[in-house]
Structure formats: structure tokens, C-alpha cells
Image 1 (spheres, one colour):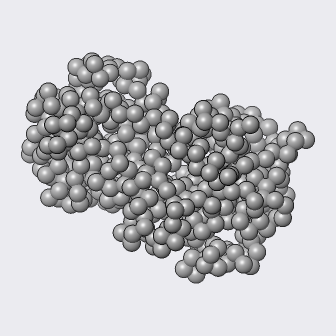
Image 2 (cartoon, rainbow, N blue to C red):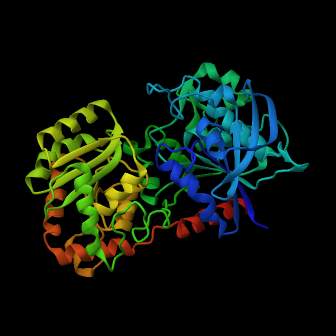
Image 3 (cartoon, rainbow, N blue to C red):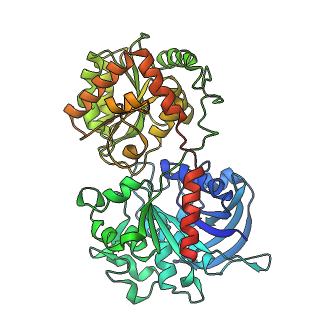
Length: 487
């Protein structure tokens, strides 16, 4: 019999996406199917989700789920089982999943995502019957703070039944986002009084949703081994490092994978000229097309790309500092992203200062990100912390050499082109220590120097493209962890 796992999250491709979380959640069912795990995904019923799925069948109803009526709908996502929590009072609104059109977080996010966690616990506890048969799950896998209340509800089991016996896992995709709300919301959660404690949901005098999950889950994972070690320190733990240390061996890191079918330069329909590691010369047509698309000068120097959120975490303030140096050593930059308004404005100013050498697109465009990986020579990822990172994995797959800060998943996935690695023929990118001008500018200079040695650069590209960061190994690791918890 396959192991039945309920995966709970606030987003999943292809239905709703704000970042890498959606890619991971969307990929997990297929990644685990070959390892004897049948995964069902539970998502909130945002308008985009309901519209993307069309007609769905209702299998359960709540007269009052944390104070609002709700239904549970069933469908498919990528051919795998899907449950949708349809609660119009919570999810039927314009804007992004977590904020309104002006970018302000919804004031009732505590209710919107606590309801998701409560629904998950009810489902895992056997509250849902489909066609007369109770749906049962062996384990609940919650992702980030938006789903982290599911382990808390399972632990305290306020609804009775056997729900509390279902083991649970919380995966931290980014410790910086924790879901903290004032103490006044606790009476509305439907949790017993004992849940309001240091071992429960209370955190600094309020409701800490991620903290609740970390305290109550049977296991905690992060999305890379290095990040699992980093969050034990004050520099990366964001105030929760003490709890992570206290959980001890219950905390581990499993590296994210990428969809090798979707991110494959040999068959990518977004590219002008598909290619593989044996036909790297075909990349030049993609580079010329990308230069034209961004209005950049076409020359033989390196074309750097950036595809990211424009935030302090991603090191975009330091990118701005090194842009003049990048242009001065013969590089050009094509950037796609959105985020901090001041960074966006400064990037536009840099593009105006360096016409034909720096170009900026504000927003996100999935097809364009593919064209950038296929036409760029190197992708810059100067993150101050990076739980895993996916853009550097896409870069490796496309022979777009990652230039990364040595942190989190970036450290785990890129082999620095130092003399020893070059001599051994294993280098796949460039790493640097410390996100500041001196380290980043030196890494850029080193990249341009390597690019100038065509045979050496081509060898690094081929090494990068040989890396296997598909979900095969990570799927096995999750399946092994699930079975260990069941045992």
C-alpha cells in the first residue's frame, strides 16, 4: 500500500505562484510517486485556483471553519489528487495571495491560513468522507508559516478523534517569513488553553504561526543541508534559532530539485535555438536574441543576467554598487524582477547611465526567464541568505554559469572554479564570501577572466549541465523521512 501524505501549502504551480515555494509544492507529488508515496495537495480556494481548475466536486462542508462557512472541493493538479479549501470570505478577493493590490498584507491573514491548517488537521483526522468512504492520511506535510498551524491543530487535537496521532512535518522555505500576529487572535483559533504556551503557539506575546509548527511537528526540514545548519545561528535563525537547536536531530535539510522536463534547453520552446552540452555553439543565437529583446549592445563580452525579487535579502543593494564595475570590465546586464520600489528606481537610473550595457524589466515573465537562462552567459545570485535557490539550478541546467554568495543552497549546489576544482575538471560556477562590494566585484572580475579563456569556460558549462538536480534524489529523501516517522 502506498503511503498517503497530505501536502498543505498556500501556493503551487501551475495554479498560483509568488516564488519558489510554488515550484516545490507543485513538483512534490510527481517526485514522490515513484517512491511509493501518494501525495494529495491542499490549497486555498483563491480565484486563480478555482478559475484554473474549472468544475470541481464538493466532498465536505464546514458550517463554521474559524467563523466562516467553507467547502472542500476535489480535483487534480498535474494529474495528482488535489483538495481546495473553498471559503469565499477568506480567499475570494482581488490582489496577491497574501496582500491586496496595493501590496498591503491582508489584516486577516492569521484567520485565512489558520483555517487552512485547521482544515488540514480535520482532513487528516478523518473528518472528510468521499462517496461514503473516509479519506485517511498517514502523514501531513506543511510548507512555511501559511500551513504551519496544521501540526499545531494535530498536536492539540481540539476536535477530538484520532487526528493528533497523525505525524507531521514542517518544511521551512524561508525563515524570514514567520506569520506573527497579536495575542487578541488566539481566542478565535479554536485551540485549547494549553496551546497558549512556549511549547505551543505563543511567541513573543503573540501568535507565531511558523513557531507553532516548528514546536509541534514531528520533524522539521529546510530546503538545503547548509541552510539547516545556518538557521541554528542568530545570523540566520531570525529569532527562532534557539527552538531549532532545541529540536536537535529532528531538523534536517533536503535539497530542492527542479523539473528537468520543464527546464531543459534541448527542448525548451521559449528558446530561439535549443541546444545541449554537445552543441553549446547554438547558445549564441539565444544570446543575440536576448540582447535584441533587452536593447543591449551585441558584442563578444559576457552577458550577465539576474532573475530575482529585488530585495535586501537577495543582495540587490550590493548589485547596484558593483554595476559600474561590471560595465567597466566589459560586462553587460539584463535584469528581470520586482520588489523594493527604491531598488527598482535605482536600477532604472543605472540603465539610463549605461544605455546599451544595462537593461531592466520590472515584473515577472516565466517565458522570458527561460530565454534569459538560455542566452545569458552567467547568472548573478548575491543573496545574503538563500534557503535553497532555484535560479542557480536553472542556470546550471542551461550552462548559464552561476556567480553566487557562499550561503545556504547556493553553497550546496555550485562548485567554485578555484584552481583545484579547475584542475580536477569539476568546477560549475563562481562562489564568493560576504555580500559586499569587494567580494562581489572580485567575483565579477574572476568571472570575466574565466570567460576570456573559451575552452576553460566551455568546460565549466559542460560540468554545470552534467549536474543532476532533478527531484529523483530529493524525492527519495522525503520518502525515507516519511517512513522513518511512521516507524
